[in-house]
Length: 259
Ligand SMILES: [Zn+2]
Image 1 (cartoon, helix red, strand yellow):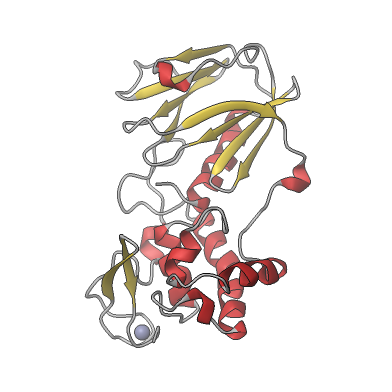
Image 2 (cartoon, rainbow, N blue to C red):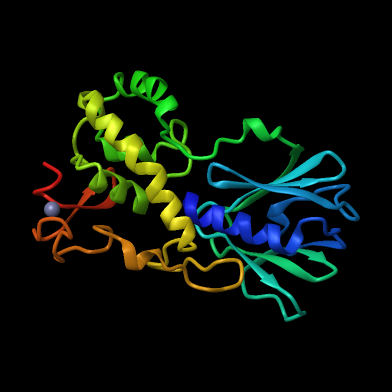
């Protein structure tokens, strides 16, 4: 599933190809997507990320909100090809077209009023967010790893980056979130934004099927410290990285650095 760095990558690449362009056609191939009246002929005025979702602002004052969910992908085709298998909709512009390919059909597309730029959160777990996050965490007894994945609390972080953030912050993923010290929270806040920004610069992490808007693999998998590295040495201390299921998700950590 695309996480914040992957969606931000799509967002930046979309700006390169659809900003100021007019929508010429909207072809719904999977009827489950639904109809979006009034978008043909509209010009794209903005492309922004909201958590793990995308918002494409239109000159009508409305905005398309797209969430890729489990298996959704976006692909830009500068010239006409036959649609890929599992294409669910196509937005056509003069210079090319945008395909949403989604084998599991969970992606959603809907029409809303465009958000004011100030309402779009840039990165999760900033220093200013800590009082609110800590207040919620104090009431929860779940492992911190599961808490970081709760999209109602912290938008944009998924399994890969939750493992990497806890490793960088030297926090055990199984530690109960209500027991984290202020110093541990500070450490998590300090590492999160740089880690996500680095992943964005690398156009995301391709450990399974992530591809960017132009069909290319990301590069961040080469910089992972623990995720998908079971049995390999911790870059900091050399101890073998362990994998454990926490809340049903494969979790990677260093048992020495993350006691
Ligand atoms: Zn270690």
